[in-house]
Length: 267
Image (cartoon, rainbow, N blue to C red):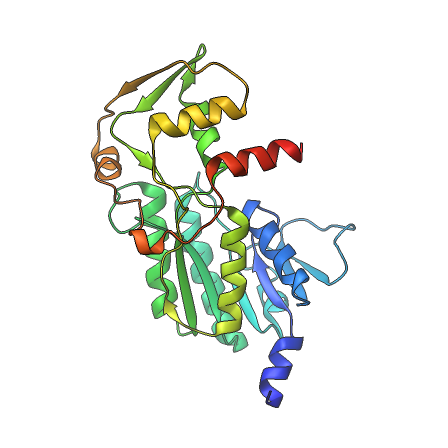
């Protein structure tokens, strides 16, 4: 190992969105591999695990970015606000400008399978961020993944009224284990700037009804649903399978049923 590589291994990895669902797993995976971690967070904390340095800042204003980026080996950009997708674009722009000024060697970005084919505001923002990352003047890697397992019961819950779940007819899901995505992101830090890498998807493509039955069984309740072909271009794109990965990218190992059972066992 040359001196530059040794210094990179010793330098912290900055994780944005490090307190979110994916970010927490990325931080845990980095620590498991003996890497120092730096978190950019809007709030201070006193209970971070050893090996974590926290910088209070805000991607949408740029506050704290210079401090957060100083001396890091890489950035794993997980921060996202699905409810306000325009902020994701603004935040990514500020991060890239600050990273370029800091001379950060590598930015790893997590995106979503289908962002270039599904006309949904959050997906459009993700695609715009992909473009910024590619043209931002910082060595980069972008990984697209399918939705996390935890997304499935949350979506079904939002589509349930008085115990009856409205299923989007003709659609399927291909959920992936969030810890597997985290592990891949950490692998990509070690691999160095790689551009757009192969998508990561879960091992099963499940119809909406199959996914619903798995969730209902995990929750110990009797399934009650009706399937309706929902209108709009976004649902048409989902029915066409644009959010699914090719079979050779279905490299995730944990199934939806296994993930829900593990979550229940952990309380």
